[in-house]
Length: 215
Image (tube, rainbow, N blue to C red; front, side):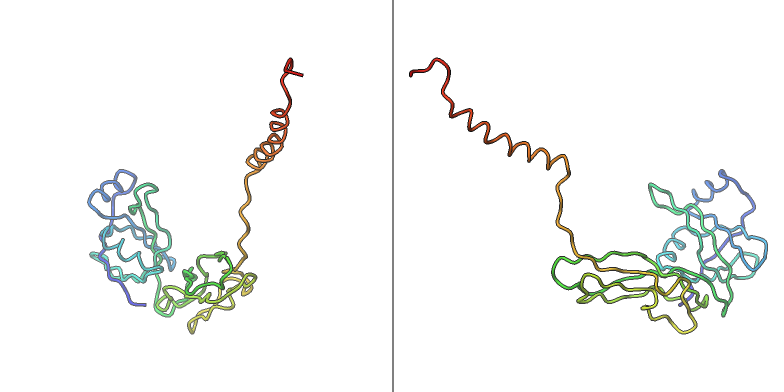
């Protein structure tokens, strides 16, 4: 995985007010932690960080103004729940050769066997332990021709050298199930049954002569 270089400015002001001022300048407050060192509070360019985070588990070379560079991985990302802009990011300091536990997205390709089969995603990402500088961006799984009842498990994923599963190998990732016939809600069923039961009675009433008719 290639490194993404980002410039960082140390922060000395804290609290909600300081964070809002940073975001008004199109920057994002962040904290760098790890290796038993004191946390480093920094601010990053918002657009550059947003672009970098498009890559899952992106490896970032953080050039901190007035200090040394840090190799980091994003560990916790806070976004505005309505507008989606970045609010805060926690960054884990790592070293080359060091192993970390991350969740790697699981993607699929191909078409299931015909017949109305459906694909259920039991896990969207696979937890693995990998070298910090050799984390795969994603795993792609072929579901071509799979039929109902087929399950793809964690142990079925081919991992890069030096990586290992961080979950039990029997953990289900994907499962093919047969599509179920769509059922009407109970209230609709009762309404239809009532309409069907009422129809013959109405017809019968229509056939009866009115009182006082000719006879």
